[in-house]
Length: 200
Length: 200
Image 1: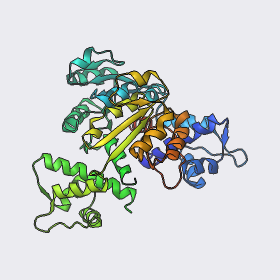
Image 2 (image 1 turned 30 degrees about the vertical axis):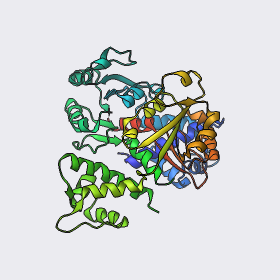
Image 3 (image 1 turned 90 degrees about the vertical axis):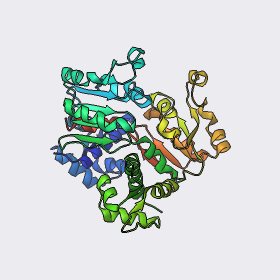
Image 4 (image 1 turned 45 degrees about the vertical axis):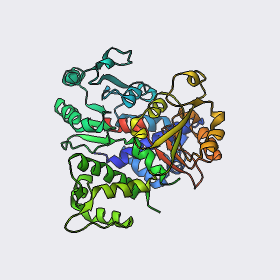
């Protein structure tokens, strides 16, 4: 089991490795990667040794190989299905988000209480939340995005968990209560922006 | 100076306090708030004592008062202006985001290289990035959101910093290099979602 903290570091390394690739590099040393990521070279080596990867002292690490191994952690070679509950501004933006599609993340469906969203020209099919169970089972979806107003967040979450969802990305500004086998990541856009006003 | 970690906790407390208000409470004890926020009661008391607030042993804290003091940290009574650079899916969603408008965060303008975005019916005026300087000075904006593709992220950031921006919320999947007086918060939507696939 890799801790959440280390997972986040691997995703950070990936951002840095993509940058090095754009600059034309194919190899990287732990201290280059550490410097760009803001961690020590030792930490970099320790993290990759978790994946059984060792760099060579003279040549460093092969960037392509590191990226492949990082992507494997996040099952990029498997089927990465996701559903979105709440097709407001945020939900719609996520359904259209290139960053997901480019990386083999398939948004199979969206859900919303508002029937006007079912007929609109959406990039993904949008259904009534009553169909969550059916879609989750049909595609074997394990991951869901919650982008509903806060008053509906916990109820939606309970419904998702009951249908078999095991991982939730939550944009609702509430703390979700979930069973132990379910993982929640939080993105609170208002808080991320507001905390900045302290510094201005 | 309040550390970023403590700022985040105050924002977390606010989420919990809003929940208690919805449930009809007007007072809260440190252990109630701590339990909901996932921290110790002692931590809650310590954090609020930083703001010079003490609860009463018999009555606890006044929720309305705590919210007022938390909002003061984030200058809710001042002018909270923000600009958005990059009016793609994410930028547009943020321009329309209720969570900002409800909380007196005023998005004064968006910027995009694509001229078709200037005439579209936007909720905010959208300009060419060449106008960043002018708008930032006109409104005295100190906070900006970057929602451009990764290849443009650093260049946009440099331009913002040069025009006087001191706080950036960055959605581009890159690490930004900024001078010491500038604060950056990162939201990497792809990473937030991808890290979940590890658990599924």
